[in-house]
Length: 499
Image (cartoon, rainbow, N blue to C red; front, side, top):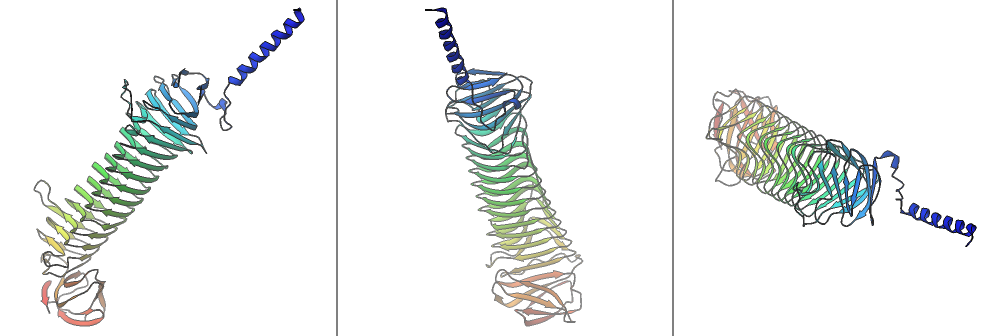
């Protein structure tokens, strides 16, 4: 063979080898600019990578240096391990579909912090199975982290947890933005320390608790939480705002210490309790609660400063040791008690009404107070029982009315009267017959001025009405369904009248 032929042959071989090597290089998706990243990982057969700080062992990819890494591709059995020591790492999900058959798809052993970013207009899916191999960190989640974890982005991250949890960190967790769909056989999101949830879209289904942390701070977001046990649980919960839809087969929110709600929109449907805490403060917000047991249960102190709270169904609407109503609207429907003030460690409870509006439709007792009550202002309408075994208002200690409007209606009577030291007078009237729900009540003074008007939610025969507009030695006309029923001259602050 001539030297010329040999050179041509060798040239063709080198060209083929070079072309083959070129074909093995990863073709980056159009949304990936490799220059933006420290490294690039594409799952497939085989796994392809580019950049520094990446080790590949079959279908397991280990990131051992700090930096930003783009992840894409699909694998039915793959894993990403972060073991970067004290360096920060960011993983950018750019169209990743990753299942791990025997461990966490994303396992973070060490790093200073880890940020998970979903790239815009991408859909990303992570999934595990119910079969985990023993590992030295005890991973129990699809995304499992030993350090602080931040999630953000504008894409979608879908997590299917078949072993235990969806996302879990032993450090702090912050979710800044993004869309998250989590379906977990145990907990959805878990942080052993502080969890901060910002303006993102959360859809979480869990067989245990949807969101769980030591301290949970919610600044905003849209939440759809469906749980077989509890939707949100922590020692301390502080919610600034958000739009919440909560469905739980047991409890909605549970705070072992303090639950604070500053604003937002809330729709609860719970088998047991919609909200439960040792102490609870509501500043603003629109609440609609449905519970087969208790709407809100507070072990110690419940304070309402504003907002609209509607309990459409419950055995007991609100239950607390002490309740302060400073403003807002409470509209409660209950099979048993509307508001139940309970003893704590044998200490009597108390109800204080400064302002606001309270409307109660109770099957048994409107206000069931194991302690004392003081009313300084506001309006209270108690639509009590339609049977003779209970009353609209029961208070084991004296109660006092110094302002506002109180109207208590029931069939049984007589309704308990406030103490004589009250600054405000009232009428206790037992009518000669019962009247049906929807009956209008109107009281006019001697100058024919309308000083009180209300339409009953339930049938009644006894009514106790107190307002600052009542004066001693004045005569008042009672109208039922716009017809004059009778007249009363008020000789004492509370004189029972029977027709």
